[in-house]
Length: 192
Image (cartoon, rainbow, N blue to C red; front, top):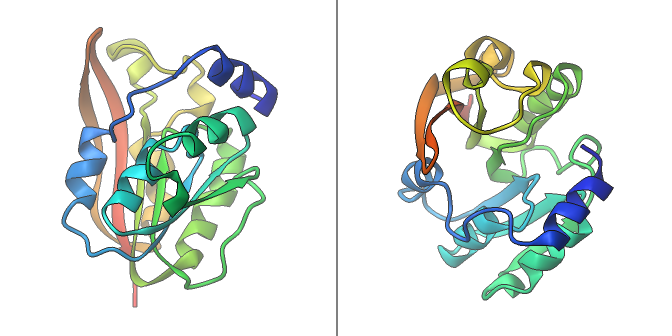
């Protein structure tokens, strides 16, 4: 999807819960605050949640309308809102403690170029959390994009996992009102 299409979606109404994804909250709640980026932040639910826990967060998204919704929420002044395409945006090397990539679905070539760069942005021991719809969700889950070429899988995330000390790389179920969705989770630390 293009930025204009996402702008239309956000202008039509709130897209997701104001609360963070439950798995993301569970994984991140025990970490000490530091510097973080939320890539493809949309309305900023994760960026705002992290900022509320003391993190210094940059929320990056190409949808001006999504970022504007985020800027209108309580605590928005604690987040740096950056309108940019995540495929070209960059952080300084070794400057972040956390890179969060939640439900960003790119064509395989774009994802293969982006994810290794995100590891470079991390300080040694910094965390990368990637969570998104698994390709198996099309046949065995509910909701989400229906184009296999943009969805995650353990195999597709293996190359970036090889750059990390991996805690988890797996398909995970997610309960929704419509049934169980299948996601892919990569949770690891930069080596060194």
